[in-house]
Image 1 (cartoon, one colour):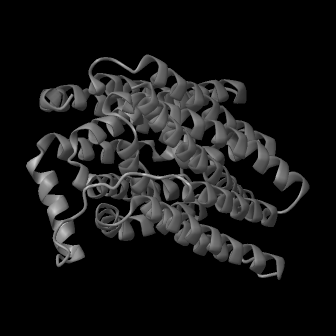
Image 2 (cartoon, one colour):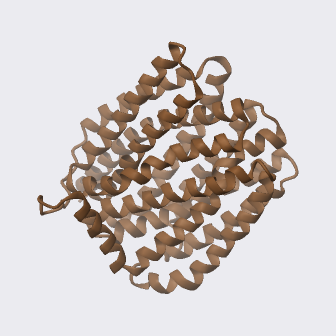
Length: 403
């Protein structure tokens, strides 16, 4: 028995390490692009365009990606997506070195990277239950969140150093190298086959329809996605407008943007450790709802912070709540969704995020050029608290058969 335990632990350790190395490069480039656009334009509209470019392709590809993830080898799908992103980033780096450094090229690369993410993220979530026993999923998802947060903590610091002493092209090449390392590590992991779509004659559209039918037949999962959709819209200002707020209200220095991202990531690291060691309440939904309420309250704190140090404190605490919000939802789906439907369900989760966050930025981004970001955070935070109250009234009753 101990040998079997060691076997899955070695696999998940290698898998998470490969994904973390790749994530570090991706996060480095993501911060570099966002900061480059922020410091170059200081425009809420331009930030909105970058957000839409970062998520719109996920909406287009995620539904089909869910079918592919359920039908084909999930490990290869992850490697393919990672490789596609790396190639696009390499091409961009070469073009920048040749002098073609128009800001619109950054939007193009965001589109391509988002398409790869639309495949990779649901594939990772669907693959983890193939390796990890059900009773260990919360711990593994918490550990995964902690490791990812650590890399995202280091990435802004590294990005700040790179933009201060070098150029954005350096970040691009680092991303390519980390992708190569991550793909190489994935090659040596042996992962058991998952249940695939049996009828090979079915079209992608038919399989997508089956995914929606599955959602329709499971009221709790459907309501969970609606709840997630609304919350994601409302937290988008905290996710994407805070660099603009920092630049306008506290100063445009790179170190301030770096500190803002690092405090959130440090908090997310602590939150991941917390959820991995504690495991949350017996009810996954209770853990999620409490985290949702705290998130809204802390968004209000961001909006009223009188000085940068206070802002950083609230940003740190928001980071702590994020894994406590996300991990219980992920585990609920991993434990309850049929294995041959997990690719499609997690793709629907990805579509939910991909629609909600850009929609939030379409609403709040242009508004940020007319009113203070602080005001937006204050009102959106109150609305997030209301979502937590809705979840108490509506979702807890539906969750009894799942939670």
